[in-house]
Amino acid sequence: MDVQVADLCDEFIDEIQIAEPIFKSYGGEQAFGGEVSVVKVFEDNVLVKRRLQNETGGGRVLVVDGGGSTGCALMGDNVASIARDNGWAGLIIYGCIRDSVEVADIPIGVLALNTRPNKSNKEGKGDYDVQVSFAGVTFNSGDYVYVDPDGVIVAERDLLEARAQ
Image (cartoon, rainbow, N blue to C red; front, top):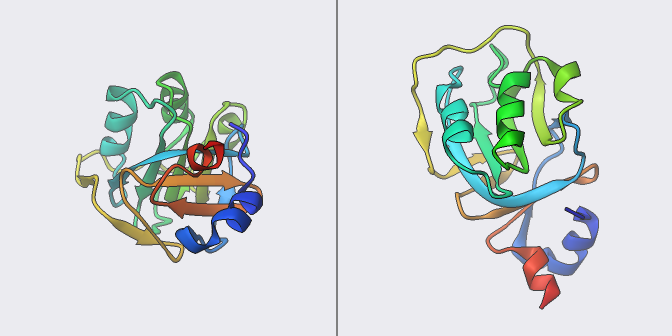
């Protein structure tokens, strides 16, 4: 996907949210975007893996509200590979990942706050498709998110499709 966030920002400034620059890029793809799918968890990645494994991504982006916790990793290379294999465009994780060297070699977009070597709990606690807010923006399943090295923007509609019309 040819995403240029600055250009989208210029063209659609009145209908986007711009995320605060709190994320680091870890995946093999630096620019990605697509329809948002939300998971909210806290130090437990069961629902994250389940959604990535059980649903075809279709170019969507999984937004994971991990509460900003740096207590454990919510994703590693195995989960990143599952996401890529199932057609997800990327993940935005308000939390940590692990296996960052391996994740960098996987052709998928991954943003996270930082790295942490220990794995998460495995209790299956959390929620799907709820509204979440972090980095100064609000995400809803069905929104669209666009990411490149310049930043992250969120819109209620597909800006690439709107631009093409």
